[in-house]
Image 1 (cartoon, rainbow, N blue to C red):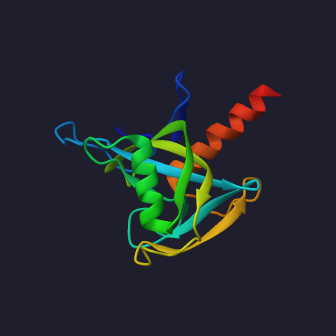
Image 2 (spheres, one colour; image 1 turned 60 degrees about the vertical axis):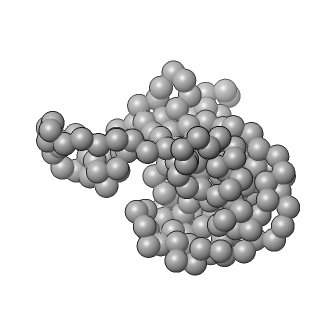
Image 3 (cartoon, rainbow, N blue to C red; image 1 turned 90 degrees about the vertical axis):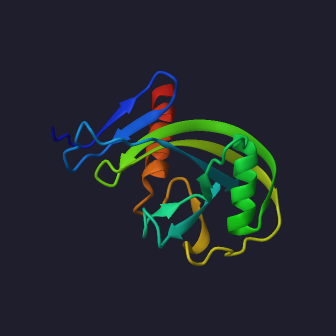
Length: 165
């Protein structure tokens, strides 16, 4: 069974983006992972880094990572933000979630977004093996290509705002 890319909008406010380029055997067992994306906003701009050395290399993404066992979502967001950028989140708000199947159906992620509007510290590049550097971008002028979970978030955000008008 081969499927082309498509996006499903779920009633709960999430997006599922399925991208299959190969057939999956029914006997293969895959488990979804939970990622947390940290959307740091300041003066109408969002902080993004160019990924390297991992899946999604050469795409622009927000700080973030995997939710650890028994870790709260906001706790994970604060930890990942500090580990990657040196910024300390002062205020966190849980945002929407998205779902992506990527890398020819080999990876399945549920990504929970956390929005940070207040933070302390100066941006640092603390994981140079995973990121080329951090930059601020206007939501209206995002760089391309975007990491799949961020692209799904942007698609959801734009659709929600256009449906309100």
